Length: 432
Image 1 (tube, rainbow, N blue to C red):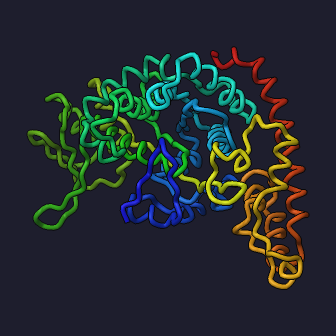
Image 2: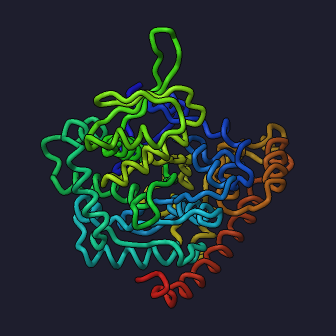
Image 3: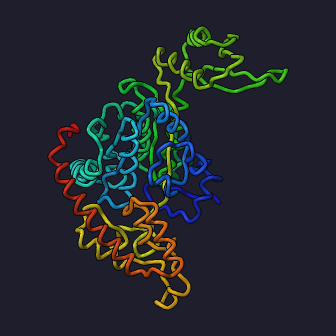
């Protein structure tokens, strides 16, 4: 298979099931019943995969601290694909998460060659205003990478644990890749781990909503989080096949293992370099204890971040969205009437003739207009089910769906753009 995911390119995923086998992404539908108030993206299976989201669902259920973090490279206009990430950040913030949004100007500078001033201008005008307009509250954190001492310092420390071979294996870097590009990848790992710094309350589950093409960043960051930790926790069996847990030192000070042993409520045996624990009935509690000891000894105690992955939207003309084909996408700053015209010209799942449509029915699952309604323009699952059924049985024609979606798209953009102007007046509330 050898599927390639490129965070800076134009990855096209024809078969999402390959991601489960090749990259170890977990199926989200298996987790869905345990989420008390799933979002529309979850209910409609737009979010298809995850890594360790059960940590987040538990935190939400028990009102425990957690964070949501994502970032945006300021490279151009925000289209509906970017809105999907913003929607998920806002939803998790509403569910009680401490929200962090990084404007990846270091990435834009190194990958796109944009000036710092241009990065700032695009970051505010295109991304931050829309994020606030979509409901991001000022209790969250919005920042530019280049202005964050936390991110720059942590990226430097993470660089000690990363090497060229690892970055090459994950991203495909080669001898022509500039060093700043590699540093920008480490900056993104620092972005993702920043919510776990002591300044923000210490280690906590952190969720990163993303498209599947961003999974390389998650694989790198999860690996670095583990490498930064002082302890390794392993499940083992003794010679009598009795299970036990071993906490092994990686970089911990000499007396840190003794601190772990003394703090544990279970039977322990302390050795040089590790402590074995018997009768462990709560692995989460064990991790919390080792994490506290690590932080007391100057470490970070990072938890590997969780992630969700959503399906890509198709272009309005079929195939992929592309900025080189303006009619294939809708930006959040598009003129509402122009956006409505794009919708009315969009490729549908209809048949060649009206007669065939009535006799054979349409193909809503191959229709970019129905997709717009599912992803962005309908809050009513019942309405979508009815539209889907009427399309399939041939009782609904494409023109009526196009008219409905075009009207709602124009209405959404008018409302959103009004809120963007109100957001401009509130930038100081966000420290900008």
